[in-house]
Image (cartoon, one colour):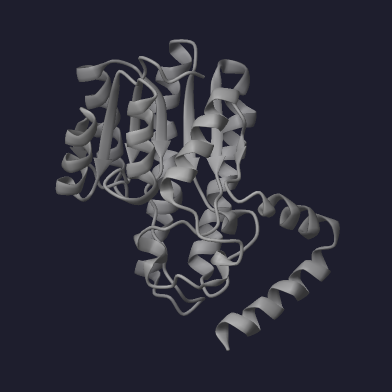
Length: 254
């Protein structure tokens, strides 16, 4: 899909990957880029930079996601590309509180579900559309030190797969973004973490990978190409892969 003259929505657009996506989509000639974020001031700054529109949105609430879609389509036209990009990270394992588990589940998974619930029927009715869901290499592999992140990103990948399988014949195209470390606020406090083993990418590099994938309608976006090798190692010998991950766990957790 070409982005020229399209209406595009990006959640988490105030910073990081979302900001880079919004800027890049505008450069690609999108007719209108909607910058959605809980950080309203940040969203407005990005929107002002690219001639877009800012909409304050808390993706942890279905009503906000629904309102974002309805307002965009009523004021700016049909959404051709919806980037469900907002996400958070929480460290820890089973001891993480129920409230925190629910919060990361709502943001990292249910926000994707709500976007599809309220947008896919509209897209199907007009012949198709595109969903770009940001997950993580952790959704294909795992995340040392964070069960909530690993679990929710696995779920995000699984949901994107289901969407592509279920609605592909009805014109819905889906891509899922699965980078390792990217220079964002999420990695700022841990620049040398395990996700950085293959280097820290800039958000602009990730945005370029997304544009390439969208143009070619490719499902899996791997800005770190090494992740494909790790996936193959995992499926080829699961026990050996787990043993290797346990070694990483010992190294990075001391």
